[in-house]
Length: 421
Ligand code: UD1
Image 1 (cartoon, rainbow, N blue to C red):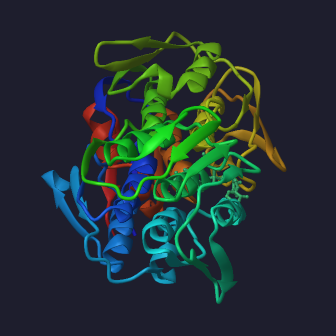
Image 2: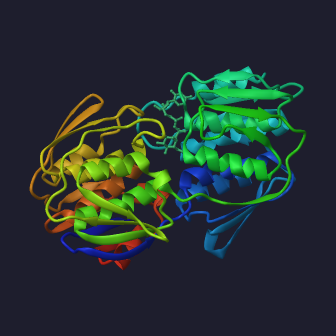
Image 3: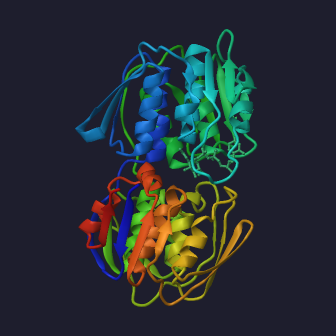
C-alpha cells in the first residue's frame, strides 16, 4: 500500500491548478443513463472514484471513452444491458446510488445495492427512497439490494425532503426530468454540484428551474438528447490547497478558484487572520506574519461551512493561537483524524459531535494513518507544518478524491513524495 512522506517547514510559492469537482462528476456521469444520445464531460477529474463510477456504468452497458488522459469522458447509454448495480462495485463508493433515479426514470426499474463508501457514519438511503416513492416508484429492500419499479413510468409530484440531502436531491432531480408532469422538490440541497448537474441536464433538454435555491421545479419531458458539459471547479480541492500556505507559510494561487464556491470557508479564514485575494485566474492565499487565530466552526449544508473541509480546518486550528470549537452537524463519527493529529502533538478533545482544539506552537512529524478521504489530506497538510517527517499510510483513500497530490504540492515547493509498496 502506498504512503506519502512529507517533510515540514518549507514555505510554498506558486500556482496550483484546481481540478473539476469529484462530487459533480459522480452525479454527471450517471446522468448519461437518462438519454440514448452521448454525453461529453470536459474538465473531468482523474480519480479512483471516477474509475469506480466508470466500472459501474460499464457494468450496466454504458460505453465510456476517456480522452485526454481522462480529462474528457464520452458516455453513451444507447444500449443498456442491465439495470442492476452490483454490491461488489457499490460497496466501494456511496455515490454509486446515483444510478437509481436515472435508471428508474428511463427504464422504469432498477436494482441497486445499498452503498458503502467512507466510514463516516450510518449514511442511510431513506430520503432517496421516500422521494422516489413520491414519484410513484415501488421500492423494496431484499438481500441488501433496493428493488425499485415504476410501472408505466414515474409521475411528477410534490416532494418535500426531510433533510436537504445532496445525493437524494440529485437522484430525484434526475428521475423527475423524464417523469410525466411537474415535480416540485422542497428543501432541496443548494450545493454548487446540484447547480452544475442542472446546467448539464438543461443542456440535454430538461426543463428545470430554481437550482441553487431550496425549491426546484422540474417539468418532465419525453426524452433527453446529447450534450457537452464542463465540470465545475472542485470547491473541496480548492479549499484544501488554499490551506496549504497557511500550514507551510508562503503564498499560493489556486487557479480556477472562485469566492462563490467557498464563501463560508473564506469567512472563517478571514476571522483566523489569513489573507485571501481574488485574482484574474483564481484565488491567492498567503499567511500573514505569525500564527493563525482560533475560530469556531460548525459544518452545515451549503452555503454553510462544508463538512468535507472540516478535517483540513481542524488540522489548521491545531497550531492556531487559542482554543477553537468544531461542531460536526452533517455526519456522525467524522473526527477520526483527531487521534492521528494528536499523535503529531495536537491537543484535541472530542465529545460526540464536538471537538475542542487547543492550539499548540508546533506539530511534530509522526507515522499516521489515513482513515477516510478528507482525513487523509488533513494529515498531509499537518505534515507541511510539522517539525520533521510525517508518513501518512493507507493513502488509497486520498486517491479517491485528490489527483496527483504530491505533484501539485511538490510543484509549489513542498517536500513530499509517494512511496509505493
Ligand atoms: C455528498 C458528498 C459528500 C459530502 C456530503 C455532504 C457526493 C458524491 N458526496 O454525499 O462528499 O460530504 O454530500 O455535503 O456528492 N442521510 C440520511 N438519509 C438519506 C441520505 C442522507 O439520513 O437518505 C444523511 C446522511 O447519513 C448524512 C447526511 O444526511 O448524515 C448528509 O448526507 P447527503 O447530503 O445525502 O450526502 P451524500 O449525498 O451522501
